Length: 260
Image 1 (cartoon, rainbow, N blue to C red):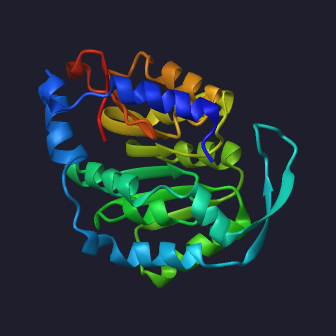
Image 2: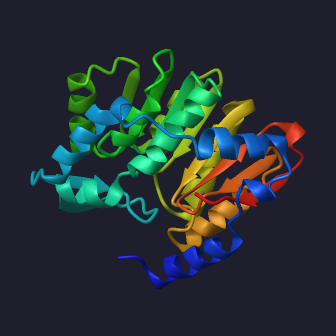
């Protein structure tokens, strides 16, 4: 159930959102009409959504150790796969948007922080000539995602299992550049800034960074408001569920709240 904070921030988003009629930037107008509100063919994602349905009926109980709330002390919890699927997966609406972004901007080097059960990862990997690296800190969840990738024959996905505080820096140390990065790991202010600061070292002017759950909590909203003002960010887009960051200096420092 949404919190009072989420109700409040959604109302603010609803008041501030604009459509293409209010966009003066040719780049943002193009993005709104050709990407944000473009239609996706559901048949492309049929096998992915079938797997989502299977997850939603899977009562397998997983024992998960998670740092949780930014703590260095691992917390152990038990969760059913169906509960994870119901509460932790990106919706098809947003995941298909990420896929359209990747195709439209010809993104090939893709990073995801927070695999979960792998549904969003599969959307990120729909461009055949792309390479997707996804990082997951919970071994039982990573195992399920890996099985799904194999069953759906997705060969352009590499899952790295382990604490993201370590695996991220190991990955970035061997990474030349990133075209697209999706940040959906520790939903706290300091870890989010830490991950963003690391990822931004590998971006270029045409890169896109997506920050998930930007209005999930006061901490995440604070993190979003911080990163969108970063010196290298030249355009930011608030879609309520997520925020998009663009790094092309020709965009001349603009922030918009778009209807989606």
